[in-house]
Length: 232
Image (cartoon, rainbow, N blue to C red; front, side, top):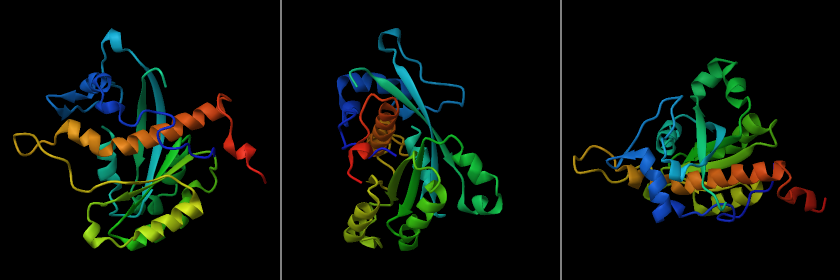
C-alpha cells in the first residue's frame, strides 16, 4: 500500500464550506435534510455543474457496539470536482463468525477497510491489531483507516492520547475521531440538520477520499510511490 498522503495535500478539506461546494451539496439535501438515494440512484446535477464520479467499495470492521452501523449512516450521506461514491459494507461481528462466506464476500474487490473502535471500550481498541491482521493481512494494497467513535464522551474515555500516539507510530495509519451524539436538529425538533450532519463527518469523508484518490494516482503511475524510494 502506498504511504498515506499528508492531510490536505490531495483535496481541499473545507471545500464543502465554499460557495461552489454548497452548490454541489444542494443535490444531496432537500429542505436542509439529507436525501436518501436507492442502490441504482444518484444525485441529479444541473448540466452546468456536471462532474466525474469515482466509485469505491468500503468494508467496515469492528467489535459489536463500537458504532459501525451508526457511522455508516452518517457517512452515506484536483482542479476539477469529482464525486466520490462510497459503497459501505457493514457486517456484524457475530454474522462474520457464524457464516464463513461473509468475510470473503465483504473483502472481495474492496478498495478500503475502516477499522472502528470506541473510546469508551478499551477492549475494542486492543482488538485492532488482531483485526488488522485478520481482515487486511492478505490485502497489503488496500487502504486502511482507523476510526475512534464516541470521541465526544471524553469524560468516560478508556483510550488515552498516549496510547493513540503509540498506535499511530507503530502502524502508520490514518486515525480519525467521530462523535456519537448527532448534530443539531431542525425546527421540528426531530429531523437532523442535513448540512450540519455533513459537516460533522466531512473530515472522515475527506480523509477517505484523499487516501483512495492518492492510491489510484500512484497505481496509475501519475504519482511516485513513496515506498519505492524508501531505503530498505
